[in-house]
Amino acid sequence: MWVRSTLTYRASFVIMALGNAAGSGLEFVTILLMFSHIDELGGFGLPEVALLYGASATALGLADLLLGNVERLGARVRDGTLDVLLVRPAPVYVQVAADRFALRRIGRLTQALVVLGWALAALPGDWAPGRVVTVAVMLVSGAAIYGAVFTLGAAFQFWAQDAAQVQNAFTYGGNAMLQYPPTVFAKDLVRGVTYIIPLAFVNWLPALRLLGRDDPLGLPGWVDFLGPVVAAVMCGGAALAWRAGLRGYRSTGS
Image 1 (cartoon, rainbow, N blue to C red):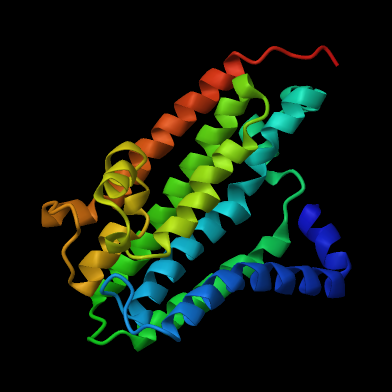
Image 2 (image 1 turned 45 degrees about the vertical axis):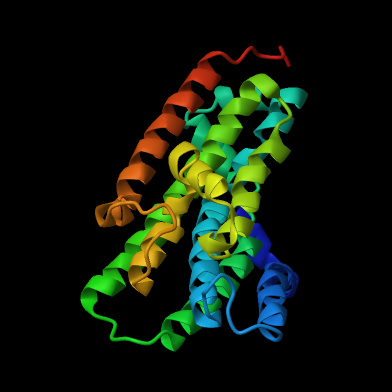
């Protein structure tokens, strides 16, 4: 229904999608401006940084398009409109994610895919099937990890009721960090996003494998392939947290 209503005014949809793409594209413009003055950033060239940017932004774009609306759960808890969803014969999570589905977010995803495509074309080396599969797995696993973070943040709002900005710090803030090489950050920060909140598995570790570079923490090579496992564990934990939050929810009585 929301897609149909959006496409009813196609000119407005195109303008909003282009605006969404332009807004997210400014982040890459910043990177281009930096490389107009330098040749390398943390030992990485422009195509390599573009790979990091494109992979993280594509994964976030997919998660944001499908699950971005769950960040508004706190507002529903506060104004009582969540109660309406509880009496409908459909999973509450699906209803929250689909409500007011923002198709304009496809602009962010398209812009990220354009940068990722350019980076893959600009990087040297043959694209054997194994490397292509690694890229595909990286994007799917990264989207699942971001989706799990979205869900964990939404589940937390059952108790906090107003924590959308905290959630954004890990999703959009994490994406901003993952767009740059891990070598420009302190090792303690890299350890934090590897062992505590494993955002490094979105793009850093698989991309380092693609680029033939060692990771700054000196982890074994097989760790680079753990993205799907990390995504599955995080999605399982997010599902349990959502279920616990929904069970503990106390209606406003509206």
